[in-house]
Image 1: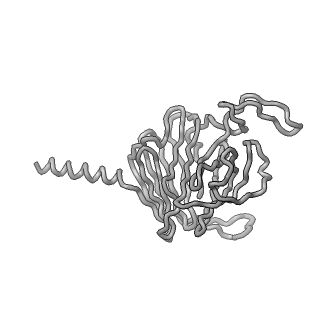
Image 2: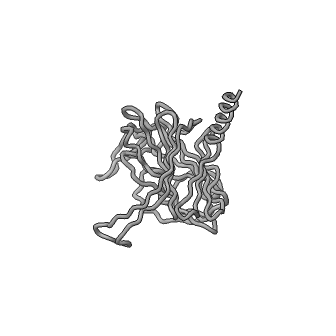
Image 3: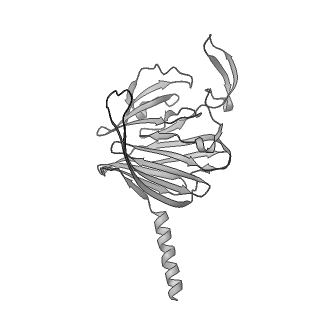
Length: 267
């Protein structure tokens, strides 16, 4: 009876451990990331105790599996990083401090998600440990703010752009939902501001942002180009892309080595 009761209590503790939100604080404890693992890997962010992001989620859709859909958590690891580097040609600072707290979540299916909490922002990335190469068909980057936001964005109607666009400012709910924005894009709640960008892209298409409503944005990525045409002496015009989307030279689906998937999404 004692053994059965002990087993029952251990099972209850295990369910509570992996069912409750996993929280990560920044080094100065002002930023808190709460990761909720259910049908999706969701997360929320508070700053100075004020809700900032809510009901956001991430997912990477491969040929083999949808990483993040009904994910089964195996292990969670916390660590702290505090390093510095000295640029060869310093611009703003002669020493660059890299300080953050890290949460690594290992899931069934040979993949992990890593969150970082800095004193002035957050970042996440997928890490895959799948044999051989993987084919990425799409990626879900769903960012939902707790309050209505204004945005400063670079509006474009297609994926082929020189990035020489003037910034526009508007309420997110008033942004043209038939168009999109390149990165970086600035969001303003009236009390706090956040800049969305990405880093460490290797053979991976750039993320574009589309407004969903007055609080929410989704990511959109170029599709694989199928037919090219002439477009001057320095470029090619993409006449047809997979799923009839205009494409780009780095586009989805894309096949890359599993270890190479190290893109950071930064808020």
